[in-house]
Image (cartoon, rainbow, N blue to C red; front, top):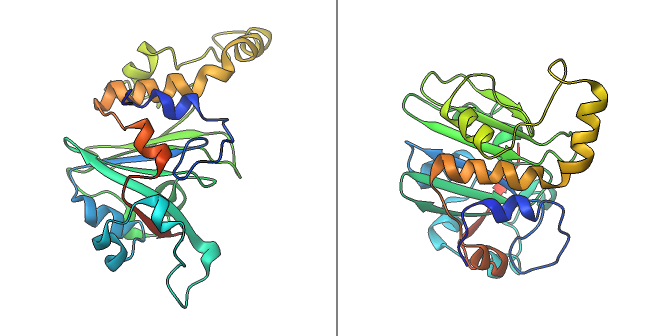
Length: 218
């Protein structure tokens, strides 16, 4: 089954146990940078990266000796076209929590990074986007970055931009979120799929058949 990125958002609140990943996934996308280099910048181990071990198998292995296992996040990854993608089902995307503190995570000239992080411990869920000018722009789910970018246009076209004050009253905003809020993550990831043209195989992700690494969280 391959159906863009919509399925990631559709399962935002799913708590099903699978060998791979299903619910609560954060997604980080990068282009203009080598895939292995990007993962190394995120904290991937060189030997583990070279092994290309599927997530279902990696989960049964111990974390590297001498390290605190609580600082490791599982990540599945792959490439399609110009984009490298990283899937994580922890509390947030490693890139979103680390780029301010780890210089190597920050994008360089000609690199684009697009990150949708669930931010479980520090809501709300948000999109972080940087391209060209190296300025990192942020949009909470339901809003745009305010940059009038192609990404903002994709969010609007997908219906992922919800009413907000002062363009609507507080009661109107509340009523809209109560009626449509459960669909918001699916709409956001639909927009990300439209913007990038990327599809990630849902069956492969849920089965844990995609290559995986531990990311050392900063």
